[in-house]
Amino acid sequence: MARPQMLKLPDVLSEIGMSRTAFYRMRARGQAPRLVKLPNGHLRVRRSDLDDWLNNLDAPAY
Image: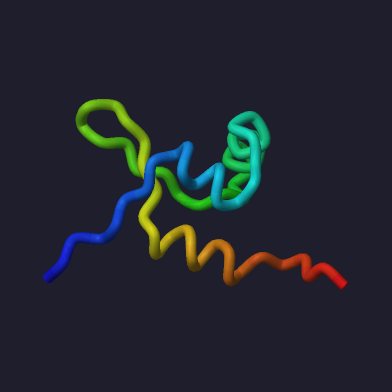
């Protein structure tokens, strides 16, 4: 079984076009993809969690 791809937070922020501050505000409201804290203290986002989050955004842009 393959390990899930883990993305660094700067890579996630670049992909979604969001500042770190805005991301953490969304995280505080429970509206951001789940972060995984590694034993060394670094933060990662699973690719599958980011893709699920992007696919389930509620507000379509018309």
